[in-house]
Length: 230
Image (cartoon, rainbow, N blue to C red; front, side, top):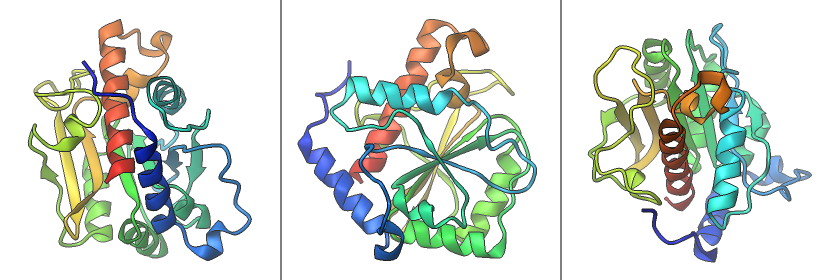
């Protein structure tokens, strides 16, 4: 059972967050009329940042149909050193391999978080140690910590009383939801050993049972709702 549909109050919160994340310079001339979208983070290092190409479009469609948010049909793509980074209150990254940020990209991502941005990182099996090492450079002194099951991200729209759903087995064992905080605000949510992104993809891509696809959609919606309301 999900909570009441989102109302206009969340749209106001989204606009406030967007205003805090976007600089006057980068906003000028930008077209923001297409509604909220998630920006896929294009990173260096050789990892497949472009993995799960149907995941974010499916998530955006679910957010559009199940909430009152004004949502674009397609995700955006940004690199850490793009000015357009600051146009997006929420970015997403995934992949199987190496992640690397140049020094200027580290600084840009830190500024992004300082100005209200939010990152959802979803390990697609293989990026864990690389992601952790790079995040330590972006947010030194803000280590990833496991979030308790009563954290709002598990209850923002749908109820997940036991935390992240398990979508794919990978190494076995339970899934883990980690967070990194900056000045008391959750700025990074890291889903590990579950592969929500695979669950979000078109059914024929991974042939997941319908209940796994639905669980992934619901968790993705929770993350979006949380990101836009905190």
